[in-house]
Image (cartoon, rainbow, N blue to C red; front, top):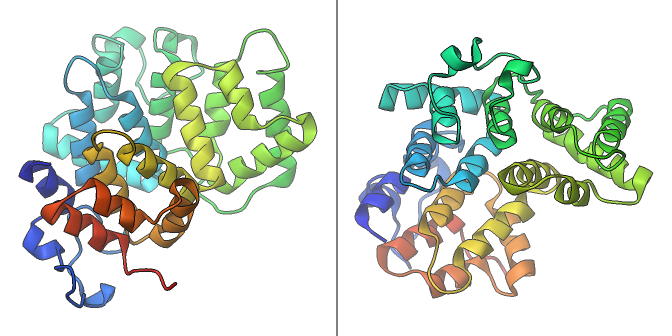
Length: 302
């Protein structure tokens, strides 16, 4: 773990770390990290940095890109686009298309603005996973917290009709519902789908789609149904086996520290059979370890 990665994830260590054994001040009195904002939301600048890093090299890190964009709301994604433009003097939507399999100027090749209707025929050259990412970036998602039960039933029937209920899959329907509906509603759609067809919506996605498009849909669905469990699984995968996926570990710990870390710790213990704190102790060292343990919060009462 090098200093550059720590700096990008957490800001200056002197500002962030409380040595093990020292009494940490109340959260309200602590200076915020450069990875989260004052209210605990992800820092768009750090998301922009992680996205730019994911674009580099021969193999684009599509799962990392999906993980970032799928777990941000409309306002946060708009802030990421602004931050990316300010930091790299590039349009994020255009960079996505150029880097993930669609060469050339987007507007020139498609004849329309990239933020236009993804269902239009002019978007044919774009692969499904790129359409999904662009749909996530467009500020059109309902960010409410209430599910419409009648609409959830309608959506579930549409997904079945255009997926398991026919030969081939209408990916436009999946993209529209998964990116336009709020998380509570998408969770309700999954529940209705299970009730109507005796099969989970996640299983339907696994059977009817593939590759990064499947990964993106499942990420959106899992985060809607149980975000704490999803992030616990991401942390477990980042630390299991030989080596540690440091970028993933940092991103989750920093962005969820003041949001739902206690729930994530509960879910992690169910998956790994040991606490998240113990896993961090076993898989990291030095100031890096101290930083992550600090983010994980106080030791849970027995």
